[in-house]
Image (cartoon, rainbow, N blue to C red; front, top):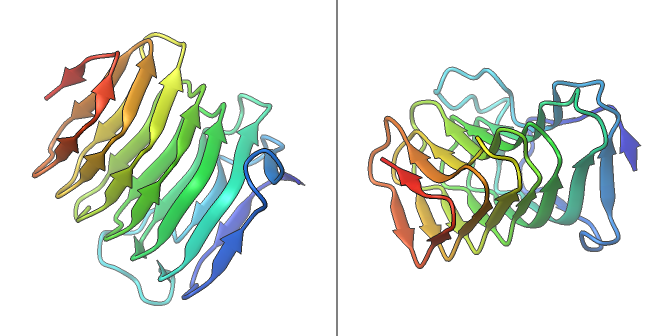
Length: 188
């Protein structure tokens, strides 16, 4: 599917499921700053019930950019208690940006060929977001696979491959790396 952008706000209990990353491809035209926006970007940190996305499940598709114009592949903001799994994000400046979001689970993500960040977690109040069996890889030097600012972030069996830095922690409280691997180094 070729799309300018997709914005999802005010959802509860929604299931968005593809047929697998090799079959269901969402391709960016490069016309939007954020290709797929889940929740309201620019939230202040207090969870807005009207704009938040809660108790939803996103799985089994690929997000891809053929243009350098689109900066963020998947942007998640003001979201709570959602599951994102079996998603491949490819060829954006930042593949996955998460801000002001709580208790979300990210499993079996493939973050490929990012230009700056594979995952960028930013904003106060990031609490108990969980990453399981995620892989971030980019051949470009000067990149950061996982940039973490927030609280209580857990990484289990995640990898960082290619040039640049694996994990970079800034203004971060209680981040845990369990059975993770980085070819790229870690900065605390």
